[in-house]
Length: 145
Image (cartoon, rainbow, N blue to C red):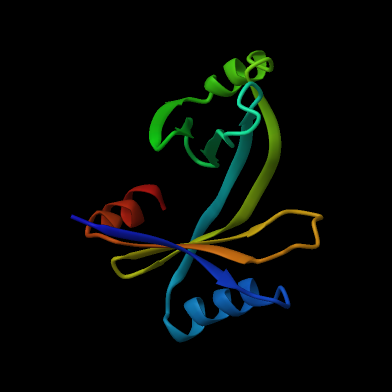
């Protein structure tokens, strides 16, 4: 059984990705494997003006799945779900889209993913880091690369 954690690494000057890459590959002797990207969208319910009802969707670069979160319920669907959401404009209004772009690293049994938001917004907060531990990642290491 594995363990995965996601965190926001606060980085005010925007140099964290380069430092992270250097420390993983040089100091910890990890290896960069492939690209990692996420697209997160925030939708607002048009009919619930005062309740603040939202729907979040998350798409990963290397999968054909989309994950929707509404009222603490997560639904996994195919990417075609996004086409359905576009047709439901009278129910949900797209408020914000954030795309994170980064890399995947492997250090032993640890799978580490790091990504920066690709945004022109000046409210940059930091980079997204996902750390996972499992013996399954050995299969990932030798199967996909």
